[in-house]
Length: 234
Image 1: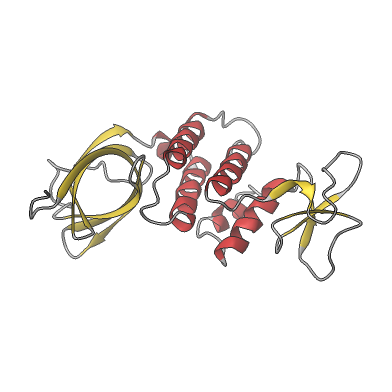
Image 2: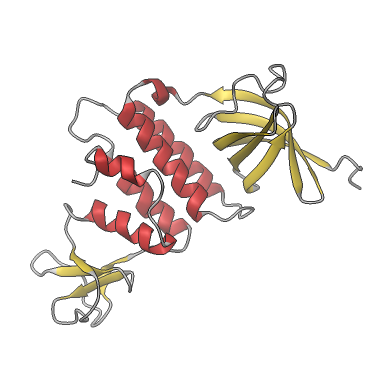
């Protein structure tokens, strides 16, 4: 039976966001492999270097110990497993990392455990950290792959394979159009009128996924503005 202090857990986690509450406490949003996305309070977190040090920073992979009491989560201790190295590697890497973390916070409900989401986020952050930054727009493909796979895991996967009207499979000899309201593609013969659409191609796919996410959220992710300004969706 849980004690009055609540049940205690120890798990790996990726820090999504941290902010100060009050004078000395920290509020942390983090993703775990088996318990999903959680919010927790680290009491006296700003002062307690022994328990938290500086490990509670966005995109760090950490080992945390926390307890749950009446649905509230209290962080007891955190240790660093892997820092977000790309924080020091240039603005584009920083923005790309913040963007994928931002999407998880925006689209993933709290307490919806799915180890595949955790593994995807961890894999993507590691990939961003190791990307060859000498290439032109080096992060665009990594972000596109993350968006597509994350949408699929969240149940929002766009239909990019067959025409929603006639069922004809997409092919290279015919134009297909992505209709945002329907979340899928149409051939030119079935394209519905009065709908916002865009021709589907490898060049337009990053922009389509980006706008489709905006359609699902009802607003653009906060970090999208910076991606656009840096030419990620040119």
